[in-house]
Image (tube, rainbow, N blue to C red; front, top):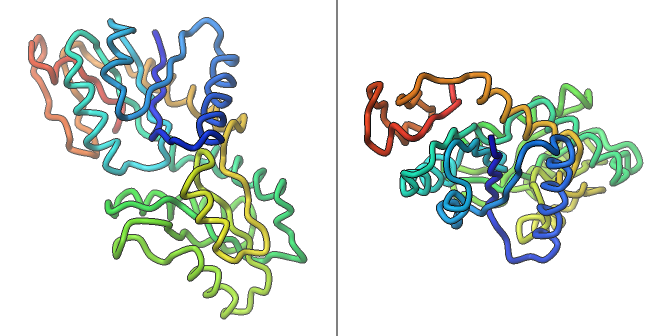
Length: 259
């Protein structure tokens, strides 16, 4: 069953190259499964080239607007495909593994960094920001030091900013504060995170092996689920309603592996 990976999309050449490298790593892990890439704006077009059963894995770190609205809308516009939509990548312990490695690569000890700011993109959706805070807790457990989630975007629902979080840790007595970019690829958000004032700033998650493994974990969970034909399991997003078995509406074409 083909895997369709869906990304936010970027015009940044480094971001595009990093995403492509991640998909190559994903494909190398399962050479027998077709792997395709689409942005949230090109999901329908990608499905037109696949047809039949498809497992869609959002390469997104939280359940914001794209997961709750854009992807279900695009899938609904492709009634010829039976699409099994997985949760976003985060939160998950494998992301904490990747974040720890990226911090180590950045030299995050930086004279004894005793705290970390997790710089997430942020969202106007409080649930998406809560997911980033869960990742911060997972990373804190791995590192054995405090980690605070901070947000680069999202207005009043997404606070503090990375710079404010760094300042708060320093005011609490942490002289060395590292910044972990909780972002998939280079781009505008990644550049903003670099200005937070940390003693070290890690690279985005990128084509890390743990991220590639997580993509397949999401895929496998959906394939194992094997939902009954013609039903849409209720998702936390509430974006899709259930359809009775044997239904012929668009909703009957869509299966979600959200619990």
